[in-house]
Image: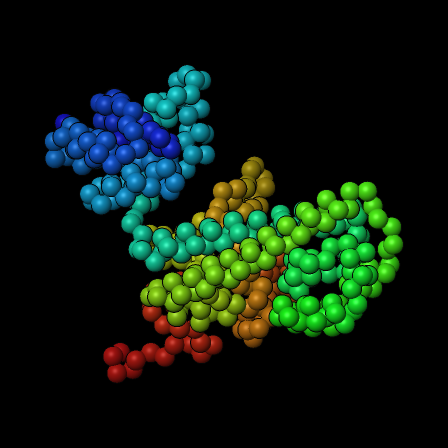
Length: 401
């Protein structure tokens, strides 16, 4: 039996595996439950079909429902490629028939792995990188929940107490949320004296309790009309305020867990030595790349994945037309873009580079992107050479030379 290619259309409960030979002929097509015994049976059967010849595996998911499958394949030393679902969808249009089935998708995945030469093999991530991927994803969910809850809170308050709604920044002020856990209506605030309200806030460890109490009382005295539904709306606002306080505490615990785990990574010191990259952005970088840059091969490829390497869009007489690629890792781009914005303010070297790009006629966004691209090369070199950032160029060892 010649070399085989196994394509797997991954799902939550079941996967479909199609195996083809060098001529593209089907050798095996099977639906497999997403369980360890069944997946091990599939791997054994495919390897028996190969008769000691190499097998190349390809899958359309790199996490989620395919996580167990990926772990088993990599754990057994199998060569595995990842084809994004969008790539599989577009490739399917070049195959016979307009129908879509799991078996056809699995065949397309296997055939693309057989023909393409631009795919990078998947590698097993270290434990710290996996933990950071889980923790940073959790933090994204928590911050998104907090943003939605703040918007609901403000919208609800606007219906019955607009003066208090515009008095505080509820996304940033913990003191305002503590206030809402006890007092939500103009009448309730007016019934309590300003001094008593300040003492109530101080007992709950609110900083600037006097100023918060004064602002709240001013809003209360600006409205003497009770809007229909005020009592129910106030109860909802109280529940939302408590939910926001709980979300804030959980985000703080998650940030602490991220920092502690990130500090254990071998590249943590080199990454955070770059101006503008703290523990959160550094952990995000590890979570997006797996912490092993060998999988990318070169800084140019990493820049392409991050959307920092423009691609040409030339046609006919039009040339030199560069655009950002349509498909790139947005979270990875966010790491470099945000860190470049910070570095442009606090790092003299980055600031000089940014000002030079602005003097060349580039917009703020273009200059920041150019700086982000330059900083990607620097970070790559720091991790490669296992050293930390310095504004001075590294000295050559004359004795070794």
